[in-house]
Length: 317
Image (tube, helix red, strand yellow):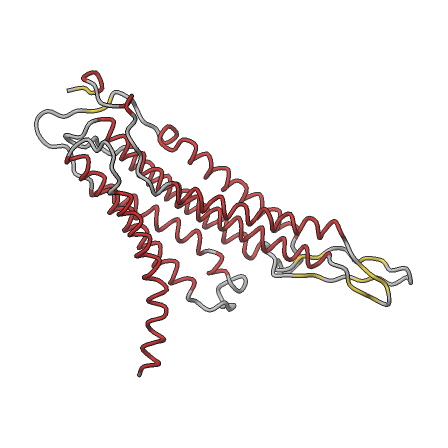
């Protein structure tokens, strides 16, 4: 009985502890001292934090559900481990979808007199540099998946090169894997398309969010940009991890294929392949670290600059 309870508690703890830590960090950051704009602005930031926390919880559930599956080759999948390869896209898609649904819970303006900012917002102006970073990461992932799909062998799961001639007239060849060819690339590209759609829906919902009644325009804009920052940071983290995993797997297979070995008394090696593989592995680590840093920086709420404090000309009555 105790052993059964322990088996059940381990996955629960592995899920609950990170989620609780993330939630604690978010709540602590929300309590930081800023020019809060009054009670209504503080309530708006708490609501934004609640929506973001729920999105993290839903994404964590999706991650655990997929990662808990055994790495095997089910009949419907093109290759073993496809579910695990789709995990980053599932996390990003669930986070963006919950974030979009959370926009429906924001309080609508009430009363006979309403205000609206003069500045017209767009997805591009709201997303800023973070949106550009997501687009660059997504483009690199597409290019990487296409490249690995083209260079994979007939099975799509290994890297191979033409046979290398030996001085004695023979030849030696082989392949190394796992390698992210089309059996992994096509499902991942489909997952990337789903992430693009859900992210666009969430950004559109944030952009079109009605101004919060009674909240100064500058503070309303800060809360709106905080929502956009956290959404795009989550997507950036997931796409960055997918890109890093793809580059790491490809680099490992390429480097392994190029390392020296003995065949018929001759040393066979391809230093170019080894160098390429190592470069890809280093790039994978750099992308993963950069994406994690971007996600951490988005935890902090946007502050209202002094120049952005509301003025009588900043709204229409």
